[in-house]
Amino acid sequence: DQQVKQNSPSLSVQEGRISILNCDYTNSMFDYFLWYKKYPAEGPTFLISISSIKDKNEDGRFTVFLNKSAKHLSLHIVPSQPGDSAVYFCAASRSGGYNKLIFGAGTRLAVHP
Amino acid sequence: GAVVSQHPSRVICKSGTSVKIECRSLDFQATTMFWYRQFPKQSLMLMATSNEGSKATYEQGVEKDKFLINHASLTLSTLTVTSAHPEDSSFYICSATPDRGSNEKLFFGSGTQLSVL
Image (cartoon, rainbow over all chains, first blue to last red):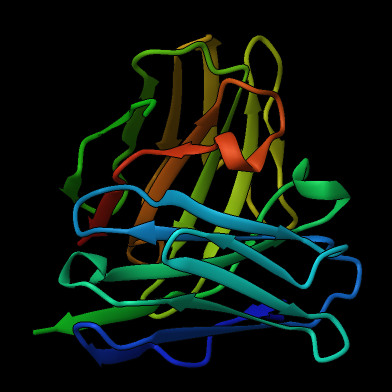
């Protein structure tokens, strides 16, 4: 039973354009969502998060949008850069981010010149 | 940022042998460490939560006698896959936090690819 789903295993975007990575969840008890980025041979690193009391959180080129009614969140990267090429994991938790994480399978983003 | 070191990065072993994977927090004391497993094209699945000085808490469906976890110090947790079988072949990754529970302060190791022949 996958509670967090990233239905696109890969995404290819041209440098300078917007990258949109999507994530769906099924458990309405989730109230905190996080995105992690993973480069080859390295562990995932925290990128950005959002609480369920918000519908948008922005940090530089990265913005996360949350649609609670649709149980959907997305990560927007604008403008995309070649260094953004990595695997992006969506994760969800309950209790305001102080609980175990449920991960999606990841989306591999390739930003090409 | 904080560094979590995981070794080995890759291990190949024969069926029936045991394999130990180490997870070390290099520049902070980790009260809590987590162990995950990822099969190809699937999610990172939490296997167990390891708290220093106490028994690990295993997720449903994870055999505690097969996946032995020891968190003997604030900087080291080990996962031992006992009597490994080909179906145990997977990517294992640990994470650690200096701040009990905060997911934004969760730092990951680089993972261990286990192949059981």
